[in-house]
Image 1 (cartoon, rainbow, N blue to C red):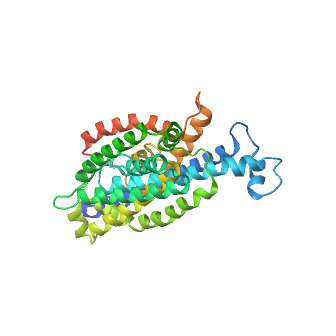
Image 2: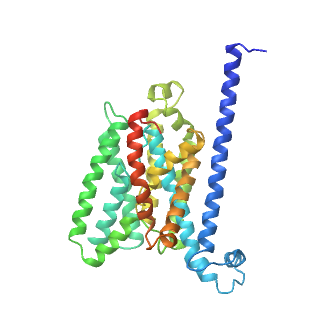
Image 3: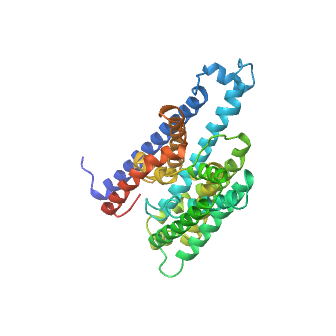
Length: 348
């Protein structure tokens, strides 16, 4: 029996939607398993390998035969920090990329990470701050820079491309300020600032994770509540408004959530290069579109940070912070995306 086009089109749409949902669910499931594997690998294998039973005993407070310090004080904070920071960078990056309909619209590119970095360097070198004070200054600066970029790019004819160009200009100015401060910094402060700018989870402590986790719950929740409207914004402002979306309000909420996620993650681990930038495009290819892209991008960010940190510590000839590893991967991927963006009109 042959169905008429009027009957077959809805059925085809349902089948396509079903296949899309299955692919997104499969991608998210695989990423969850990969994240769990990398967390387990970080906990069990380092300079020395521990049996899974020892790790479990240390985590539950049972007698672990001397493994308590290694697991609970060294490896667990590092694994959790990598996980939470990666989730924040992944979610924050893909929110910008989907909202602005451009894979280049990442916090790495449009100046938010540069703003947090410049403020942190100023706090370390000029104000001689350290620890929590540097994180607070970095978060406040990230939010301030995002507000400035938003303000400069708004007004008549404001669009994603305008915000990206303004962000690139602001980023270049902030990088110049950072370089100027570092040139006159004492050797010890310069080394500390460079370590922070590189992006690293070395020396992570459990107490440092709670603010980032709270930011993930608050801003990630806000992003999840705006997911439907964010997806409709991809159709353009006019089409989104016709479907009942308040475009400006949605854009403000998504920007606030994305900036909050990136700023808190940067304050804890530094601007880990290209994680926010890479997560969205990789997640889009795994899910086959934007269905389920938010959780997929967050998990992809976690995979990148966990795998990059482990590779930098144990798989390369020299020990490197995670930001160096992700930067080495992200730079060629940026060139690839620039070439591809010109060919497919810049959609994620």
